[in-house]
Length: 70
Image (cartoon, rainbow, N blue to C red):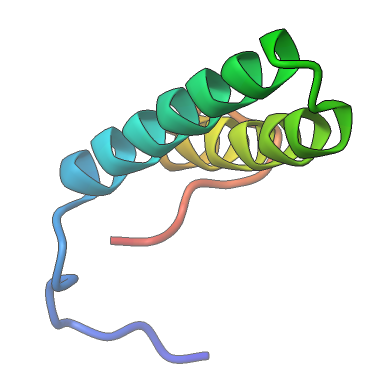
């Protein structure tokens, strides 16, 4: 795939911060659901938190997978 010379619409630093924020929000929701005894909802929220944590790690370049091109 040819690499575009256009800058991304959202800077990488903002994308990392957004992913970290979303991970934290989902983790908080998971903990809240877990404390309320809502096991299924808690598990789903934990899965979403993990997805966003993995995304933030990848965007920051700290993953086994390569970071996205700028």
